[in-house]
Image (cartoon, rainbow, N blue to C red):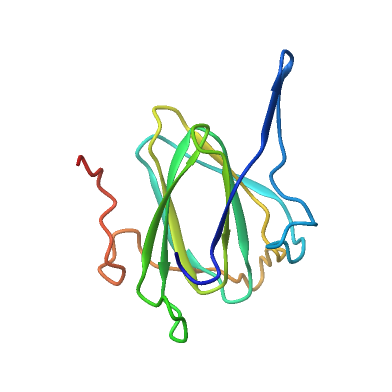
Length: 151
């Protein structure tokens, strides 16, 4: 696993009325602080990536559909520099993925319906000076192929 990344299995509590799932609690070991909460989506087969932050930690939960979240450690000082990790998250695997600054990440919708991600980052998005640095999704700078892998 990439240094500083955590994957927390989320508890889903179903009953005859529906279900409840806690996504983030302030008493969890990887909670640092609250910046904001936002949601983003991807249509089937769409790739959103790559990007990284210099200050912000992300806490991503896929609440609908399925996503392949891919992480790449590009931090010069990291003991896991150059490591790639794929995480399949969503309705069939309810997890929260904690992504520290400097870890490049992107995701691809792998379900037949639009996938919805809720993110609780540690920082507010600053429109005038965003802490968001992008790399084109299919750039050779990151050794990853977004195509489906039929094993």
